[in-house]
Length: 300
Length: 300
Image (cartoon, rainbow over all chains, first blue to last red; front, side):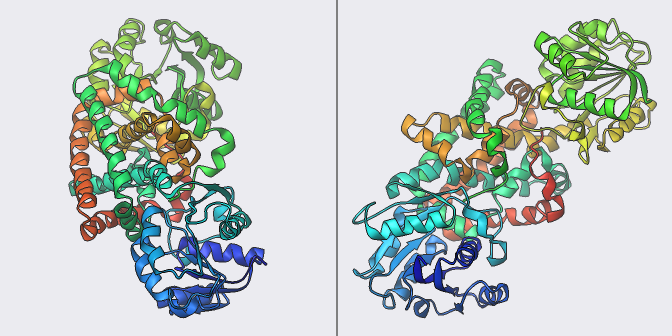
Protein backbone atom coordinates (compact mmCIF):
# COMPACT_ATOMS: atom_id res chain seq x y z
CA UNK A 1 0.00 0.00 0.00
CA UNK A 2 1.53 3.29 -1.12
CA UNK A 3 -1.17 5.43 0.50
CA UNK A 4 -3.93 4.68 2.98
CA UNK A 5 -6.53 6.87 1.28
CA UNK A 6 -6.42 8.36 -2.20
CA UNK A 7 -8.97 10.89 -3.44
CA UNK A 8 -9.38 11.56 -7.15
CA UNK A 9 -11.16 14.82 -7.97
CA UNK A 10 -12.64 14.77 -11.47
CA UNK A 11 -13.51 11.45 -12.97
CA UNK A 12 -12.95 11.78 -16.70
CA UNK A 13 -10.66 9.71 -18.88
CA UNK A 14 -7.56 10.31 -16.76
CA UNK A 15 -9.23 10.15 -13.34
CA UNK A 16 -11.10 6.96 -14.13
CA UNK A 17 -8.05 5.32 -15.72
CA UNK A 18 -6.07 6.09 -12.56
CA UNK A 19 -8.86 4.59 -10.44
CA UNK A 20 -8.81 1.39 -12.47
CA UNK A 21 -5.05 1.08 -12.14
CA UNK A 22 -5.09 1.94 -8.41
CA UNK A 23 -7.68 -0.80 -7.88
CA UNK A 24 -5.81 -3.36 -10.01
CA UNK A 25 -2.52 -2.73 -8.21
CA UNK A 26 -4.04 -2.18 -4.74
CA UNK A 27 -2.18 1.12 -4.36
CA UNK A 28 -4.36 2.24 -1.45
CA UNK A 29 -6.77 0.97 1.20
CA UNK A 30 -9.56 3.35 0.36
CA UNK A 31 -10.22 5.11 -2.95
CA UNK A 32 -12.53 8.13 -2.94
CA UNK A 33 -13.96 9.59 -6.11
CA UNK A 34 -15.26 13.17 -6.14
CA UNK A 35 -16.99 14.78 -9.09
CA UNK A 36 -19.46 17.67 -9.20
CA UNK A 37 -21.52 15.82 -11.80
CA UNK A 38 -24.21 13.47 -10.45
CA UNK A 39 -24.21 11.66 -13.79
CA UNK A 40 -20.49 10.96 -13.50
CA UNK A 41 -20.88 9.79 -9.88
CA UNK A 42 -23.66 7.41 -10.95
CA UNK A 43 -21.41 6.02 -13.68
CA UNK A 44 -18.57 5.50 -11.17
CA UNK A 45 -20.94 3.63 -8.86
CA UNK A 46 -22.17 1.49 -11.74
CA UNK A 47 -18.63 0.74 -12.86
CA UNK A 48 -17.70 0.05 -9.23
CA UNK A 49 -14.48 2.04 -9.51
CA UNK A 50 -14.24 3.61 -6.02
CA UNK A 51 -14.94 2.79 -2.37
CA UNK A 52 -16.65 6.13 -1.85
CA UNK A 53 -18.28 8.39 -4.42
CA UNK A 54 -19.38 11.93 -3.66
CA UNK A 55 -20.23 15.27 -5.24
CA UNK A 56 -18.94 17.02 -2.11
CA UNK A 57 -15.39 17.93 -3.16
CA UNK A 58 -14.43 19.46 0.19
CA UNK A 59 -15.51 16.46 2.24
CA UNK A 60 -13.88 14.02 -0.22
CA UNK A 61 -10.33 15.06 0.75
CA UNK A 62 -10.71 14.89 4.55
CA UNK A 63 -8.99 11.51 4.98
CA UNK A 64 -6.82 11.64 1.86
CA UNK A 65 -3.08 11.01 2.02
CA UNK A 66 -2.89 11.64 -1.71
CA UNK A 67 -5.24 13.95 -3.58
CA UNK A 68 -5.18 13.74 -7.38
CA UNK A 69 -6.75 16.70 -9.15
CA UNK A 70 -7.94 15.63 -12.61
CA UNK A 71 -10.13 18.51 -13.77
CA UNK A 72 -9.57 21.20 -16.44
CA UNK A 73 -7.03 23.81 -15.32
CA UNK A 74 -9.67 26.54 -15.58
CA UNK A 75 -11.39 25.33 -12.39
CA UNK A 76 -8.26 24.82 -10.25
CA UNK A 77 -9.03 27.95 -8.21
CA UNK A 78 -12.51 26.71 -7.36
CA UNK A 79 -11.11 23.33 -6.38
CA UNK A 80 -8.39 24.99 -4.28
CA UNK A 81 -10.95 27.11 -2.48
CA UNK A 82 -13.20 24.15 -1.71
CA UNK A 83 -10.51 21.76 -0.48
CA UNK A 84 -8.19 24.18 1.36
CA UNK A 85 -9.96 23.89 4.71
CA UNK A 86 -10.42 20.10 4.58
CA UNK A 87 -6.95 18.84 3.70
CA UNK A 88 -5.24 16.58 6.23
CA UNK A 89 -1.91 17.77 7.61
CA UNK A 90 0.88 16.07 5.65
CA UNK A 91 -1.32 15.28 2.66
CA UNK A 92 0.25 15.21 -0.80
CA UNK A 93 -1.58 16.99 -3.62
CA UNK A 94 -0.82 16.25 -7.25
CA UNK A 95 -2.60 17.06 -10.51
CA UNK A 96 -2.61 15.87 -14.11
CA UNK A 97 -2.97 19.21 -15.92
CA UNK A 98 -1.41 19.72 -19.34
CA UNK A 99 -0.03 23.15 -18.38
CA UNK A 100 2.08 23.59 -15.27
CA UNK A 101 2.99 27.23 -14.61
CA UNK A 102 -0.62 28.35 -14.48
CA UNK A 103 -1.70 25.19 -12.70
CA UNK A 104 0.67 26.06 -9.87
CA UNK A 105 -0.26 29.75 -9.90
CA UNK A 106 -3.95 28.93 -9.66
CA UNK A 107 -3.83 26.20 -7.04
CA UNK A 108 -0.92 26.88 -4.70
CA UNK A 109 -2.26 30.02 -3.01
CA UNK A 110 -5.15 27.98 -1.59
CA UNK A 111 -3.06 25.19 -0.13
CA UNK A 112 -2.11 25.25 3.58
CA UNK A 113 1.57 25.12 4.56
CA UNK A 114 1.36 21.61 6.03
CA UNK A 115 0.54 19.87 2.72
CA UNK A 116 2.85 19.24 -0.26
CA UNK A 117 1.88 20.10 -3.82
CA UNK A 118 3.68 18.04 -6.49
CA UNK A 119 2.47 19.13 -9.94
CA UNK A 120 2.52 16.41 -12.57
CA UNK A 121 1.37 15.69 -16.09
CA UNK A 122 1.00 12.19 -17.54
CA UNK A 123 1.44 12.39 -21.31
CA UNK A 124 -1.30 9.90 -21.95
CA UNK A 125 -4.85 9.97 -23.21
CA UNK A 126 -7.12 9.11 -26.08
CA UNK A 127 -9.59 11.16 -28.08
CA UNK A 128 -12.37 9.92 -25.80
CA UNK A 129 -13.53 11.45 -22.53
CA UNK A 130 -15.60 10.43 -19.52
CA UNK A 131 -15.34 7.68 -16.88
CA UNK A 132 -16.39 4.94 -19.28
CA UNK A 133 -13.51 5.74 -21.65
CA UNK A 134 -10.78 5.06 -19.08
CA UNK A 135 -8.64 1.92 -18.91
CA UNK A 136 -6.02 0.69 -16.46
CA UNK A 137 -3.16 0.51 -18.95
CA UNK A 138 -3.47 4.08 -20.20
CA UNK A 139 -0.18 5.09 -18.56
CA UNK A 140 1.82 2.00 -19.48
CA UNK A 141 5.14 3.04 -21.01
CA UNK A 142 4.08 6.70 -21.12
CA UNK A 143 5.94 9.66 -19.69
CA UNK A 144 4.73 11.29 -16.52
CA UNK A 145 6.37 14.68 -16.10
CA UNK A 146 6.76 16.05 -12.58
CA UNK A 147 7.54 19.76 -12.21
CA UNK A 148 8.68 20.06 -8.58
CA UNK A 149 8.28 23.31 -6.70
CA UNK A 150 9.52 24.43 -3.26
CA UNK A 151 11.94 21.80 -1.91
CA UNK A 152 12.62 20.31 -5.32
CA UNK A 153 13.19 16.86 -6.73
CA UNK A 154 14.51 15.12 -3.66
CA UNK A 155 11.68 15.91 -1.29
CA UNK A 156 9.81 13.00 0.19
CA UNK A 157 6.54 14.07 -1.43
CA UNK A 158 8.06 14.30 -4.92
CA UNK A 159 9.61 10.85 -4.53
CA UNK A 160 6.27 9.41 -3.42
CA UNK A 161 4.45 10.91 -6.40
CA UNK A 162 7.20 9.63 -8.71
CA UNK A 163 6.78 6.12 -7.27
CA UNK A 164 3.04 6.43 -7.67
CA UNK A 165 3.34 7.17 -11.40
CA UNK A 166 5.81 4.32 -11.80
CA UNK A 167 3.31 2.00 -10.13
CA UNK A 168 0.83 3.17 -12.76
CA UNK A 169 3.25 1.99 -15.44
CA UNK A 170 4.62 5.41 -16.40
CA UNK A 171 8.22 6.56 -16.84
CA UNK A 172 8.95 9.64 -14.73
CA UNK A 173 10.85 12.72 -15.86
CA UNK A 174 11.37 15.97 -13.94
CA UNK A 175 11.67 19.48 -15.32
CA UNK A 176 10.73 23.06 -14.46
CA UNK A 177 7.12 24.14 -15.02
CA UNK A 178 8.25 26.72 -17.58
CA UNK A 179 10.21 24.22 -19.61
CA UNK A 180 7.33 21.75 -19.50
CA UNK A 181 4.97 24.35 -20.92
CA UNK A 182 7.35 25.23 -23.73
CA UNK A 183 7.94 21.60 -24.76
CA UNK A 184 4.25 20.71 -24.61
CA UNK A 185 3.42 23.89 -26.50
CA UNK A 186 5.10 22.45 -29.59
CA UNK A 187 4.52 18.71 -29.12
CA UNK A 188 0.89 18.86 -28.10
CA UNK A 189 -0.81 22.23 -27.84
CA UNK A 190 0.08 23.55 -31.30
CA UNK A 191 -0.85 20.28 -33.08
CA UNK A 192 -4.20 20.29 -31.33
CA UNK A 193 -4.85 23.96 -32.08
CA UNK A 194 -4.12 23.34 -35.75
CA UNK A 195 -6.34 20.27 -35.82
CA UNK A 196 -9.22 22.16 -34.21
CA UNK A 197 -8.73 24.90 -36.77
CA UNK A 198 -8.69 22.69 -39.85
CA UNK A 199 -11.83 20.83 -38.82
CA UNK A 200 -13.46 24.21 -38.30
CA UNK A 201 -12.45 25.22 -41.81
CA UNK A 202 -14.10 22.12 -43.23
CA UNK A 203 -17.17 22.91 -41.19
CA UNK A 204 -17.58 26.24 -42.99
CA UNK A 205 -17.50 24.76 -46.48
CA UNK A 206 -20.62 24.68 -48.61
CA UNK A 207 -23.03 21.90 -47.78
CA UNK A 208 -22.53 20.10 -51.12
CA UNK A 209 -18.85 19.52 -50.48
CA UNK A 210 -19.16 18.85 -46.75
CA UNK A 211 -20.65 15.39 -47.14
CA UNK A 212 -17.77 14.49 -49.40
CA UNK A 213 -15.25 15.72 -46.87
CA UNK A 214 -16.64 13.05 -44.58
CA UNK A 215 -16.82 10.43 -47.30
CA UNK A 216 -13.22 10.88 -48.40
CA UNK A 217 -11.80 11.77 -45.01
CA UNK A 218 -9.33 8.89 -45.09
CA UNK A 219 -7.09 11.22 -47.10
CA UNK A 220 -5.72 12.78 -43.93
CA UNK A 221 -8.66 14.78 -42.62
CA UNK A 222 -9.85 11.95 -40.38
CA UNK A 223 -6.60 12.00 -38.41
CA UNK A 224 -7.09 15.68 -37.70
CA UNK A 225 -10.66 15.01 -36.63
CA UNK A 226 -9.41 12.44 -34.18
CA UNK A 227 -6.82 14.83 -32.75
CA UNK A 228 -9.51 17.52 -32.48
CA UNK A 229 -11.98 15.19 -30.75
CA UNK A 230 -10.71 15.95 -27.25
CA UNK A 231 -12.78 17.68 -24.59
CA UNK A 232 -13.33 21.31 -25.74
CA UNK A 233 -13.39 22.74 -22.19
CA UNK A 234 -10.11 21.08 -21.29
CA UNK A 235 -8.52 22.39 -24.47
CA UNK A 236 -9.87 25.90 -24.00
CA UNK A 237 -8.20 25.94 -20.59
CA UNK A 238 -4.94 24.58 -21.98
CA UNK A 239 -4.73 27.19 -24.74
CA UNK A 240 -5.59 30.07 -22.42
CA UNK A 241 -3.28 28.86 -19.65
CA UNK A 242 -0.30 28.26 -21.90
CA UNK A 243 -0.95 31.37 -23.91
CA UNK A 244 2.62 32.63 -24.10
CA UNK A 245 4.19 29.40 -25.36
CA UNK A 246 1.26 28.61 -27.66
CA UNK A 247 1.24 32.04 -29.28
CA UNK A 248 5.01 31.96 -29.69
CA UNK A 249 5.06 28.62 -31.46
CA UNK A 250 1.95 29.53 -33.47
CA UNK A 251 3.79 32.58 -34.73
CA UNK A 252 6.70 30.43 -35.89
CA UNK A 253 4.29 28.00 -37.51
CA UNK A 254 2.55 30.83 -39.36
CA UNK A 255 5.86 32.06 -40.75
CA UNK A 256 6.71 28.57 -42.03
CA UNK A 257 3.28 28.08 -43.54
CA UNK A 258 3.55 31.45 -45.30
CA UNK A 259 6.85 30.33 -46.84
CA UNK A 260 5.22 27.13 -48.09
CA UNK A 261 2.28 29.09 -49.45
CA UNK A 262 4.60 31.45 -51.29
CA UNK A 263 6.57 28.58 -52.78
CA UNK A 264 3.35 27.02 -54.09
CA UNK A 265 2.02 30.29 -55.46
CA UNK A 266 5.29 31.01 -57.23
CA UNK A 267 5.74 27.45 -58.53
CA UNK A 268 9.08 27.17 -56.74
CA UNK A 269 9.41 23.40 -56.88
CA UNK A 270 12.94 23.16 -55.52
CA UNK A 271 12.23 25.40 -52.56
CA UNK A 272 9.06 23.48 -51.84
CA UNK A 273 10.96 20.20 -51.93
CA UNK A 274 13.50 21.36 -49.34
CA UNK A 275 10.56 22.09 -47.00
CA UNK A 276 8.93 18.72 -47.64
CA UNK A 277 12.11 16.74 -47.05
CA UNK A 278 12.56 18.14 -43.53
CA UNK A 279 10.09 15.82 -41.75
CA UNK A 280 12.00 12.75 -42.94
CA UNK A 281 14.43 12.67 -40.05
CA UNK A 282 11.63 12.95 -37.51
CA UNK A 283 9.75 10.22 -39.31
CA UNK A 284 12.80 7.96 -39.05
CA UNK A 285 13.15 8.66 -35.34
CA UNK A 286 9.49 8.51 -34.46
CA UNK A 287 7.98 5.91 -36.73
CA UNK A 288 10.27 2.97 -36.13
CA UNK A 289 8.49 -0.41 -36.16
CA UNK A 290 9.05 -1.00 -32.45
CA UNK A 291 7.00 2.04 -31.66
CA UNK A 292 4.24 1.16 -34.09
CA UNK A 293 1.92 -0.19 -31.46
CA UNK A 294 1.79 3.18 -29.77
CA UNK A 295 1.02 5.19 -32.84
CA UNK A 296 -2.73 4.94 -32.52
CA UNK A 297 -3.03 6.64 -29.22
CA UNK A 298 -3.58 10.36 -29.33
CA UNK A 299 -2.53 11.91 -26.10
CA UNK A 300 -2.93 15.29 -24.53
CA UNK B 1 -8.79 -12.60 -66.78
CA UNK B 2 -9.74 -8.98 -67.08
CA UNK B 3 -6.81 -8.07 -69.30
CA UNK B 4 -4.26 -10.12 -71.19
CA UNK B 5 -1.31 -7.87 -70.37
CA UNK B 6 -1.10 -5.17 -67.70
CA UNK B 7 1.85 -2.79 -67.44
CA UNK B 8 2.46 -0.82 -64.27
CA UNK B 9 4.75 2.19 -64.69
CA UNK B 10 6.30 3.25 -61.39
CA UNK B 11 6.68 0.67 -58.69
CA UNK B 12 6.26 2.49 -55.39
CA UNK B 13 3.75 1.77 -52.67
CA UNK B 14 0.71 2.00 -54.97
CA UNK B 15 2.25 0.30 -58.01
CA UNK B 16 3.63 -2.61 -56.01
CA UNK B 17 0.40 -3.03 -54.02
CA UNK B 18 -1.51 -3.23 -57.29
CA UNK B 19 0.95 -5.82 -58.59
CA UNK B 20 0.45 -7.97 -55.50
CA UNK B 21 -3.33 -7.80 -55.83
CA UNK B 22 -3.24 -8.45 -59.59
CA UNK B 23 -1.13 -11.55 -58.95
CA UNK B 24 -3.32 -12.77 -56.07
CA UNK B 25 -6.52 -12.38 -58.08
CA UNK B 26 -5.01 -13.43 -61.44
CA UNK B 27 -6.35 -10.30 -63.10
CA UNK B 28 -4.09 -10.71 -66.15
CA UNK B 29 -1.99 -13.25 -68.03
CA UNK B 30 1.16 -11.17 -68.05
CA UNK B 31 2.17 -8.43 -65.65
CA UNK B 32 4.92 -6.03 -66.75
CA UNK B 33 6.67 -3.72 -64.32
CA UNK B 34 8.49 -0.65 -65.61
CA UNK B 35 10.53 1.69 -63.44
CA UNK B 36 13.41 3.99 -64.34
CA UNK B 37 15.25 2.97 -61.18
CA UNK B 38 17.50 -0.08 -61.43
CA UNK B 39 17.30 -0.47 -57.65
CA UNK B 40 13.52 -0.64 -57.79
CA UNK B 41 13.64 -3.16 -60.67
CA UNK B 42 16.03 -5.34 -58.68
CA UNK B 43 13.65 -5.22 -55.72
CA UNK B 44 10.71 -6.21 -57.93
CA UNK B 45 12.71 -9.17 -59.25
CA UNK B 46 13.65 -10.22 -55.74
CA UNK B 47 10.06 -9.92 -54.54
CA UNK B 48 8.94 -11.79 -57.67
CA UNK B 49 6.09 -9.37 -58.28
CA UNK B 50 6.00 -9.24 -62.09
CA UNK B 51 6.46 -11.48 -65.15
CA UNK B 52 8.66 -8.91 -66.82
CA UNK B 53 10.69 -6.11 -65.26
CA UNK B 54 12.29 -3.34 -67.27
CA UNK B 55 13.71 0.17 -67.07
CA UNK B 56 12.60 0.76 -70.66
CA UNK B 57 9.27 2.55 -70.16
CA UNK B 58 8.49 2.81 -73.89
CA UNK B 59 9.02 -0.87 -74.58
CA UNK B 60 7.09 -1.90 -71.47
CA UNK B 61 3.73 -0.79 -72.85
CA UNK B 62 3.98 -2.44 -76.29
CA UNK B 63 1.74 -5.42 -75.47
CA UNK B 64 -0.29 -3.79 -72.71
CA UNK B 65 -4.09 -3.86 -72.75
CA UNK B 66 -4.08 -1.84 -69.54
CA UNK B 67 -1.35 0.64 -68.61
CA UNK B 68 -1.35 1.91 -65.03
CA UNK B 69 0.70 5.05 -64.46
CA UNK B 70 1.81 5.19 -60.82
CA UNK B 71 4.45 7.93 -60.78
CA UNK B 72 4.38 11.49 -59.35
CA UNK B 73 2.23 13.84 -61.47
CA UNK B 74 5.28 16.01 -62.18
CA UNK B 75 6.70 13.43 -64.62
CA UNK B 76 3.47 12.62 -66.51
CA UNK B 77 4.66 14.58 -69.56
CA UNK B 78 7.89 12.60 -69.73
CA UNK B 79 5.97 9.35 -69.40
CA UNK B 80 3.48 10.49 -72.06
CA UNK B 81 6.30 11.33 -74.45
CA UNK B 82 8.03 8.00 -73.95
CA UNK B 83 4.97 5.77 -74.28
CA UNK B 84 3.02 7.63 -76.98
CA UNK B 85 4.62 5.79 -79.88
CA UNK B 86 4.49 2.34 -78.30
CA UNK B 87 0.88 2.06 -77.13
CA UNK B 88 -1.20 -0.69 -78.67
CA UNK B 89 -4.36 0.37 -80.50
CA UNK B 90 -7.32 -0.02 -78.15
CA UNK B 91 -5.20 0.07 -75.00
CA UNK B 92 -6.67 1.56 -71.86
CA UNK B 93 -4.51 3.96 -69.85
CA UNK B 94 -5.26 4.80 -66.26
CA UNK B 95 -3.32 6.51 -63.50
CA UNK B 96 -3.38 6.82 -59.70
CA UNK B 97 -2.46 10.49 -59.31
CA UNK B 98 -3.84 12.50 -56.39
CA UNK B 99 -4.70 15.46 -58.63
CA UNK B 100 -6.79 15.00 -61.74
CA UNK B 101 -7.17 18.22 -63.77
CA UNK B 102 -3.42 18.63 -64.19
CA UNK B 103 -2.89 14.90 -64.60
CA UNK B 104 -5.18 14.99 -67.62
CA UNK B 105 -3.69 18.21 -68.97
CA UNK B 106 -0.18 16.80 -68.76
CA UNK B 107 -0.78 13.33 -70.14
CA UNK B 108 -3.61 13.52 -72.66
CA UNK B 109 -1.82 15.54 -75.38
CA UNK B 110 0.66 12.67 -75.80
CA UNK B 111 -1.88 9.91 -76.16
CA UNK B 112 -2.89 8.70 -79.65
CA UNK B 113 -6.57 8.76 -80.62
CA UNK B 114 -6.93 4.97 -80.64
CA UNK B 115 -6.31 4.53 -76.90
CA UNK B 116 -8.61 5.44 -73.97
CA UNK B 117 -7.44 7.42 -70.98
CA UNK B 118 -9.46 6.83 -67.80
CA UNK B 119 -8.01 8.97 -64.98
CA UNK B 120 -8.42 7.48 -61.52
CA UNK B 121 -7.31 8.00 -57.95
CA UNK B 122 -7.43 5.32 -55.28
CA UNK B 123 -7.73 7.00 -51.87
CA UNK B 124 -5.37 4.56 -50.26
CA UNK B 125 -1.83 4.56 -48.99
CA UNK B 126 0.36 4.52 -45.93
CA UNK B 127 3.17 6.76 -44.77
CA UNK B 128 5.67 4.34 -46.32
CA UNK B 129 6.96 4.32 -49.85
CA UNK B 130 8.77 1.93 -52.20
CA UNK B 131 8.01 -1.56 -53.60
CA UNK B 132 8.68 -3.29 -50.30
CA UNK B 133 6.04 -1.22 -48.51
CA UNK B 134 3.17 -2.40 -50.71
CA UNK B 135 0.58 -5.00 -49.76
CA UNK B 136 -2.28 -6.65 -51.65
CA UNK B 137 -5.08 -5.43 -49.37
CA UNK B 138 -4.20 -1.74 -49.57
CA UNK B 139 -7.33 -0.94 -51.58
CA UNK B 140 -9.76 -3.10 -49.62
CA UNK B 141 -12.84 -1.06 -48.72
CA UNK B 142 -11.20 2.15 -49.95
CA UNK B 143 -12.62 4.58 -52.48
CA UNK B 144 -11.27 4.67 -56.00
CA UNK B 145 -12.40 7.85 -57.73
CA UNK B 146 -12.66 7.82 -61.50
CA UNK B 147 -12.86 11.18 -63.30
CA UNK B 148 -14.03 10.25 -66.81
CA UNK B 149 -13.19 12.44 -69.79
CA UNK B 150 -14.35 12.31 -73.43
CA UNK B 151 -17.16 9.79 -73.74
CA UNK B 152 -18.00 9.83 -70.04
CA UNK B 153 -19.03 7.33 -67.44
CA UNK B 154 -20.69 4.76 -69.67
CA UNK B 155 -17.83 4.13 -72.06
CA UNK B 156 -16.47 0.65 -72.25
CA UNK B 157 -13.03 1.74 -71.06
CA UNK B 158 -14.41 3.51 -67.98
CA UNK B 159 -16.49 0.46 -67.09
CA UNK B 160 -13.45 -1.79 -67.45
CA UNK B 161 -11.32 0.43 -65.19
CA UNK B 162 -14.17 0.55 -62.66
CA UNK B 163 -14.35 -3.25 -62.65
CA UNK B 164 -10.59 -3.39 -62.26
CA UNK B 165 -10.68 -1.25 -59.11
CA UNK B 166 -13.55 -3.32 -57.75
CA UNK B 167 -11.48 -6.44 -58.31
CA UNK B 168 -8.79 -4.75 -56.25
CA UNK B 169 -11.28 -4.44 -53.40
CA UNK B 170 -12.08 -0.75 -53.85
CA UNK B 171 -15.44 1.02 -54.02
CA UNK B 172 -15.74 3.13 -57.16
CA UNK B 173 -17.12 6.65 -57.36
CA UNK B 174 -17.18 8.97 -60.38
CA UNK B 175 -16.89 12.75 -60.45
CA UNK B 176 -15.45 15.53 -62.59
CA UNK B 177 -11.69 16.18 -62.35
CA UNK B 178 -12.34 19.69 -61.01
CA UNK B 179 -14.62 18.49 -58.25
CA UNK B 180 -12.16 15.76 -57.30
CA UNK B 181 -9.38 18.30 -56.90
CA UNK B 182 -11.51 20.54 -54.72
CA UNK B 183 -12.63 17.72 -52.42
CA UNK B 184 -9.13 16.28 -52.10
CA UNK B 185 -7.78 19.78 -51.52
CA UNK B 186 -9.56 19.91 -48.19
CA UNK B 187 -9.58 16.21 -47.18
CA UNK B 188 -5.99 15.42 -48.06
CA UNK B 189 -3.81 18.14 -49.54
CA UNK B 190 -4.39 20.80 -46.87
CA UNK B 191 -3.93 18.36 -43.94
CA UNK B 192 -0.67 17.19 -45.47
CA UNK B 193 0.57 20.71 -46.15
CA UNK B 194 -0.15 21.66 -42.53
CA UNK B 195 1.57 18.55 -41.23
CA UNK B 196 4.66 19.22 -43.35
CA UNK B 197 4.70 22.77 -42.06
CA UNK B 198 4.39 21.94 -38.36
CA UNK B 199 7.19 19.37 -38.51
CA UNK B 200 9.30 22.01 -40.23
CA UNK B 201 8.57 24.43 -37.41
CA UNK B 202 9.77 21.88 -34.86
CA UNK B 203 12.87 21.37 -36.95
CA UNK B 204 13.82 25.03 -36.55
CA UNK B 205 13.64 25.01 -32.76
CA UNK B 206 16.75 25.29 -30.66
CA UNK B 207 18.69 22.05 -30.30
CA UNK B 208 18.03 21.73 -26.56
CA UNK B 209 14.30 21.54 -27.03
CA UNK B 210 14.38 19.47 -30.22
CA UNK B 211 15.32 16.22 -28.51
CA UNK B 212 12.42 16.71 -26.15
CA UNK B 213 10.03 17.26 -29.02
CA UNK B 214 10.92 13.75 -30.08
CA UNK B 215 10.80 12.36 -26.56
CA UNK B 216 7.34 13.74 -25.82
CA UNK B 217 5.97 13.49 -29.35
CA UNK B 218 3.08 11.28 -28.24
CA UNK B 219 1.30 14.52 -27.32
CA UNK B 220 0.06 14.94 -30.88
CA UNK B 221 3.24 15.79 -32.77
CA UNK B 222 3.91 12.18 -33.74
CA UNK B 223 0.64 11.97 -35.67
CA UNK B 224 1.67 14.97 -37.72
CA UNK B 225 5.05 13.40 -38.34
CA UNK B 226 3.35 10.31 -39.65
CA UNK B 227 1.12 12.36 -41.96
CA UNK B 228 4.17 14.27 -43.17
CA UNK B 229 6.20 11.12 -43.80
CA UNK B 230 4.99 10.66 -47.37
CA UNK B 231 7.23 10.92 -50.41
CA UNK B 232 8.37 14.58 -50.73
CA UNK B 233 8.54 14.52 -54.54
CA UNK B 234 5.02 13.15 -54.82
CA UNK B 235 3.73 15.82 -52.45
CA UNK B 236 5.58 18.62 -54.18
CA UNK B 237 3.86 17.61 -57.40
CA UNK B 238 0.47 17.41 -55.69
CA UNK B 239 0.73 20.87 -54.16
CA UNK B 240 1.96 22.48 -57.37
CA UNK B 241 -0.58 20.69 -59.54
CA UNK B 242 -3.56 21.44 -57.33
CA UNK B 243 -2.38 24.96 -56.63
CA UNK B 244 -5.71 26.71 -57.06
CA UNK B 245 -7.72 24.49 -54.71
CA UNK B 246 -4.88 24.20 -52.19
CA UNK B 247 -4.29 27.95 -52.00
CA UNK B 248 -8.01 28.61 -51.71
CA UNK B 249 -8.52 26.24 -48.81
CA UNK B 250 -5.27 27.36 -47.20
CA UNK B 251 -6.57 30.92 -47.25
CA UNK B 252 -9.74 29.83 -45.45
CA UNK B 253 -7.69 27.87 -42.94
CA UNK B 254 -5.48 30.90 -42.26
CA UNK B 255 -8.52 33.04 -41.56
CA UNK B 256 -9.85 30.50 -39.07
CA UNK B 257 -6.49 30.11 -37.38
CA UNK B 258 -6.18 33.87 -37.03
CA UNK B 259 -9.56 33.94 -35.29
CA UNK B 260 -8.40 31.26 -32.87
CA UNK B 261 -5.15 33.13 -32.28
CA UNK B 262 -7.03 36.33 -31.54
CA UNK B 263 -9.37 34.59 -29.12
CA UNK B 264 -6.39 33.16 -27.21
CA UNK B 265 -4.52 36.47 -27.16
CA UNK B 266 -7.59 38.31 -25.88
CA UNK B 267 -8.54 35.62 -23.35
CA UNK B 268 -11.93 35.19 -25.00
CA UNK B 269 -12.82 31.85 -23.44
CA UNK B 270 -16.41 31.67 -24.69
CA UNK B 271 -15.46 32.46 -28.26
CA UNK B 272 -12.64 29.94 -28.13
CA UNK B 273 -15.00 27.29 -26.83
CA UNK B 274 -17.41 27.74 -29.75
CA UNK B 275 -14.47 27.06 -32.09
CA UNK B 276 -13.36 24.00 -30.17
CA UNK B 277 -16.82 22.45 -30.05
CA UNK B 278 -17.17 22.45 -33.84
CA UNK B 279 -15.15 19.27 -34.55
CA UNK B 280 -17.47 17.22 -32.32
CA UNK B 281 -19.98 16.42 -35.04
CA UNK B 282 -17.24 15.28 -37.42
CA UNK B 283 -15.77 13.19 -34.66
CA UNK B 284 -19.11 11.49 -34.14
CA UNK B 285 -19.48 10.79 -37.84
CA UNK B 286 -15.91 9.76 -38.49
CA UNK B 287 -14.75 8.01 -35.37
CA UNK B 288 -17.50 5.49 -34.88
CA UNK B 289 -16.33 2.11 -33.57
CA UNK B 290 -17.17 0.29 -36.80
CA UNK B 291 -14.67 2.43 -38.61
CA UNK B 292 -12.00 2.09 -35.98
CA UNK B 293 -10.01 -0.49 -37.88
CA UNK B 294 -9.39 1.95 -40.68
CA UNK B 295 -8.16 4.79 -38.56
CA UNK B 296 -4.53 3.84 -38.64
CA UNK B 297 -4.02 4.13 -42.31
CA UNK B 298 -2.84 7.45 -43.58
CA UNK B 299 -3.75 7.84 -47.19
CA UNK B 300 -2.84 10.25 -49.92
